[in-house]
Image (tube, rainbow, N blue to C red; front, side, top):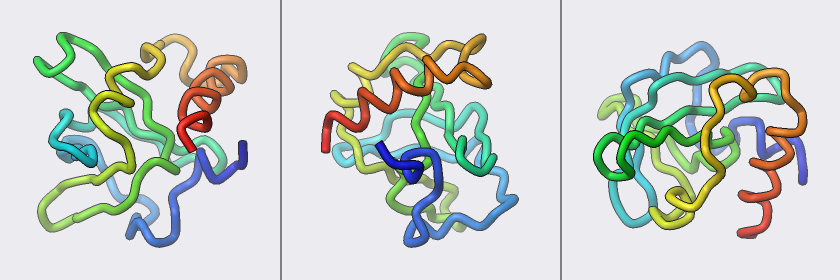
Amino acid sequence: MTDSMWGHQAASGYQAGTDLTGFKVEATDGSIGKVDKHSDEVGSAYIVVDTGVWIFGKHVLLPAGTIQSIDAADRKIYVALTKDEIKDSPEFDKDKHTGDAGYHQQVEGYYGSRD
């Protein structure tokens, strides 16, 4: 896995310092929810998506490298994942998502295996 999994792709249109909270998130096959929180920390950038009723009460951690593009005007983020890939992703762990290398490796392993 490369560090790019945890960094924004240059082509995504992300502008450093942009608050992505509340943006709608679109998978390749439809809407999946809204950004609950995000980080643009170098080497550990991600978004946490609240899937709402789509996957009852589930939050998912998506590394910034999964973001294809950001439409700031429409407040939408497009990710290079299907709904099923997101639904089957590791459960978001609010206690481990920062500072737990093992959790990040688990997430990397999941999203890296789909390449």
